[in-house]
Length: 344
Image 1: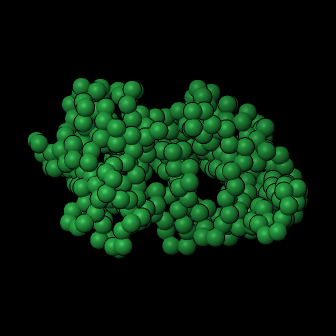
Image 2: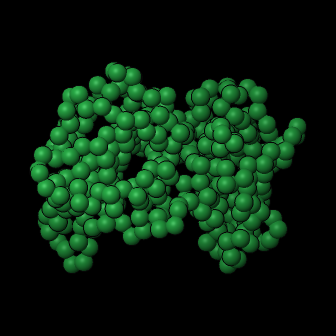
Image 3: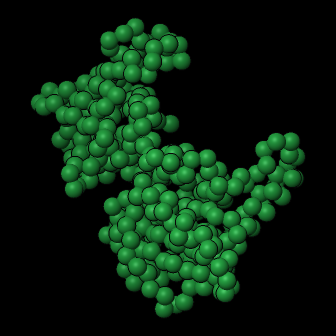
């Protein structure tokens, strides 16, 4: 479970403190903007360079506004505009393996850094960091910041934002395919996005639902139905944010060959060269493959791959040759919004 140590005081206004018995946010009738600013006392702040439980860090009171996070610390004041926050995650930071942090991926000009926030009471072992995390996420979601931002015509998908987030076309359905987790964290599996519902939702008995899903997945795998597939795997040797070595490419080819979404019916020659690509600031690869059918209806795969920390992500556009150019524009826009989770 996530945990936090800091009494959250809403000011100004008659709002209850987080963790108190005075009520919950469900009791509030004010508009979302009127709930802010909210101040959280005794918060620790660190960058990725400041490691270790007793390492250098700032301590102070954190105020959440609709536009920013403001830390009023003892030695300095720190402002983090929400517009600079790309991703909000929860988990471990390097150097602090026994406690959880709220980890922000923040753009600082042309550089990106990770910033940690947590309850600073009891020498960093306070019990309300989860509430602080939820308070920050609630603000980001209400005002469309970080993983909850999306370009026009797309909408954010943040259901698995402990693994990744991205924007997808409005109204598309999502389907979790064979996700497998360890200790509550998805280790591998796929998320399928498609304009066509995968399951009939009205008056369907369970066997009919399974049949509908199987038909829909078969249509995607054969290329008859347009879909985006995001496959999450654990990175192996030769894969990192800096790119893929020959060993990494060899491992990648092995994955693709047996993947139900990226393997058959596509023809991928051993000598097929990958083009450079980029996902969320990490150097990756792009592969364009087609099925053997000599027609405009033949299946096309546009696959993008990148790795960050110990996570490898494969994002593939599945469509037909006839529709590829039309489908590519939104796919490129979505790739530009892709975000890796940044907690370990």
